Length: 280
Length: 322
Image (tube, rainbow over all chains, first blue to last red; front, side):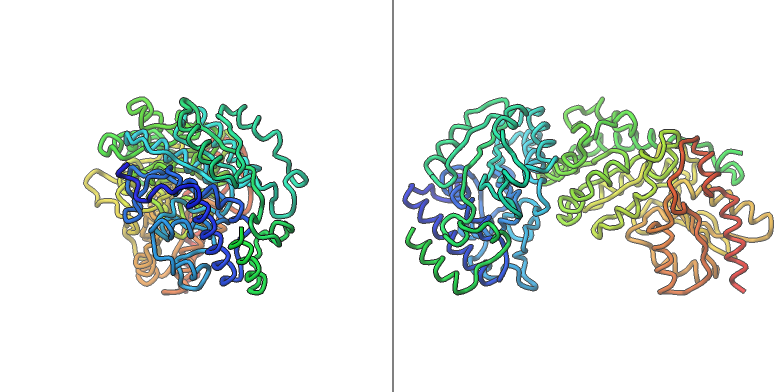
C-alpha cells in the first residue's frame, strides 16, 4: 500500500498510541485551561483505529492530495483529539499542540478548515460535518477517485435536523464511500441523552434512512477495526458505525461527572489523571 | 410607463432567464463549475444546466442546510460550486452553514440568491428576500454582487467564477431594462460604474433601482437638476473612491435599493460618506414593514420604490446642500 504514509500498527501498538493521544489531549486542555477533554477521550480509540489501523490513506506532507481518504471531525469540540492525531500522523510538529487556544496561534478552540494542515472542515456548530462529507463523496465521483470519507459525529449532534437531511441525501446518492461513526457516549452538555433528548431507537432511525448500521464497543480497538473492515464491503448505501463509548474514558473524575463537558482539569487533577492513563 | 422608458433604455429581459443563460455559458466554458439546487431549478433557471450537464447538477431537495455544506465538500475537491436557490431560503435556512462552511472556511463557493428583494410579487412576503444584503453582509469574507441589467448579470456570473473566494450574487424574477451595451466597460468587482454624469447630486443605486434612478435623473434634468447615476453593483467590497468622489463633486447623495433600509446598501454608503466627505443624504428603500402579495409594479409603487420617490428624495438632498 504505497499511499499509506503511516505504518499500520499492531493492536498493542494501537493501544499505546491511544494512550499517547490521551496524554497529549490532557496536556493541551490543562495548559489551555479550557476545552472538552471528556468529549475527546470517548473517541480516542475510534480515531486511533482510523489513522493507524490501516484505514486512512493520506500524505501528511501533502494535505490536499486529491486521492486521500477524508477524516472529518463533525463534533468540532473534540478539536484537541483531531490536532493530537494530526501531529502524531506528521502533519505538523507536536510542539504546536501546546499553543491550543493561545492568542496568535492557528490551533483554534474549534477546527477551522486548513488553518492547521489536515483540518478538512470548519466545525463546532454541530450537525454540519456529514453533509460536507457527502460533498466530498460526490466530488470523488466526478473526479473518478475511489477514496473513502469518514465522518465522526457526536451523539447529541444527531439531534440536529441537518444530520437527517444528510442521511436522506447520502442514501439517495447511494454514497457507499461515506462512513459515519457516532461517538455514542450517552451524554450531551446538560445531561444524559436519554433524559435531555432521546435518540433511541437510534440504529432503527439510520436503517429507516437507508443506511447500513453496525454497533461496536468504541473502546475495543479490535472490534472497531473489524467493523471498519466490514463496512468497506457494503455496496450501494452509506454505512454508520454506532460506537458505544464512555464520556471521559480513562480518567475517573471525568467518567464520573458529566458536568465536566467543556471543562479542563486543574493541574492538580491532571497529575492524577496522567497516572490513571499511564496505568491503564 | 414602463421602467426605464422615460430614460430611453432598451426593453427589459427577465433576469432569472438571463441568469440561467449566463450560468449555462459558464458551465460550457469551465468544467470545474458544478451547480447545486434546492429544488427550485425551474424558478431560478439553473434548470438549463441540469438539461445540458446532468452529471454536474445536483438537486439536494428542500434542505438548504445540507445543500450548502454539500457544496462546501465539492469545493474541497477542486470544484467551483454555484449553490442556487431563493435568496430568502438560502440565507435564512442555511445562515449558520454559510457562516462556517463558506465564510469562516473562506472557500471558493458561489451563492446565488434568486428572487431577492420584493419583486417576485404575488407569492408574497414568505418567499421574498428584502433582507438578503443585510444578512450576507454579516459574512466578512463574502463579495456581494447585485447586477442591474442583462449584460451586467452575464458579467457578474463570469466575475463571480473568476474571483477566488465566497461570492453572493442576487438574481431576480422580474425583467430589467438594458443599462449597458456590449461594448461598455467590463464589469469589475468593487468598481462602480457611472451610468449617467451629473454635477448637482449623485443617485447611487443597485439592481432594478438603477433603471429607476435613470428615469428619475431624466425627470430631474427636465427641472434643470443634473444627477449623476452610479450603479453600485458590488455591495462588498464597496467602492469608497467613487462614493468619496460623488460626495466631493456633487455635494449630495441619494441611495436607492430594493431592500430594507436597515442594514442595506444605503446605510453602508452612509458610513463611508460620514468618514470621507459628509454631505446631505437621503435614502430610498423599504421601511420596516413586510410587503403584500401583488404585481411587482404595484409593490414598487405602494412601498416607495419609484422614480418619483427618488425625485422627491433628490429635491430634499439638494435643498439640504444650502
